[in-house]
Length: 105
Image (cartoon, rainbow, N blue to C red; front, side, top):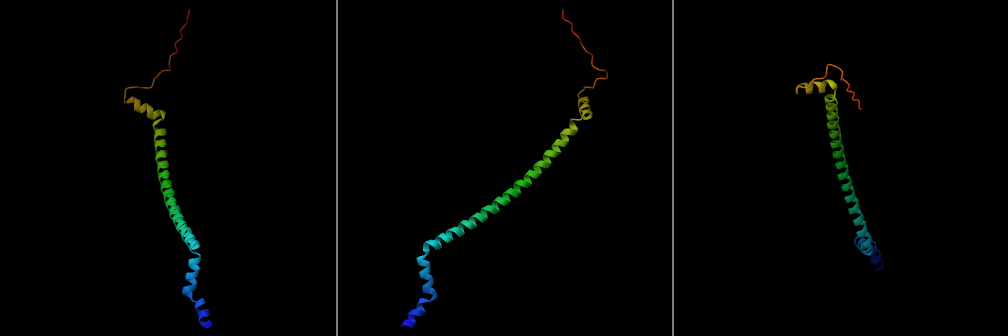
């Protein structure tokens, strides 16, 4: 009979069930930690994808800004302004401006 008790003591089914039942709180805690670890990994992947998308949008906006700035620099040149106002009937003066001096008495 002692031989049977010794073999049942090292039986995998009863031994593991006894260990799990005695440490059920710890097993549940480990399951909770595993769930948190998986959720954290998913959240990190989502944040990385969002950052990459925002970086792409930022690069496109930077290109758009630079093209607008180049257009603005071109349109602000004196020759370009003179050409545009000539269409409205304005011309650059051919003489230097005259100075008006008012004397008060």
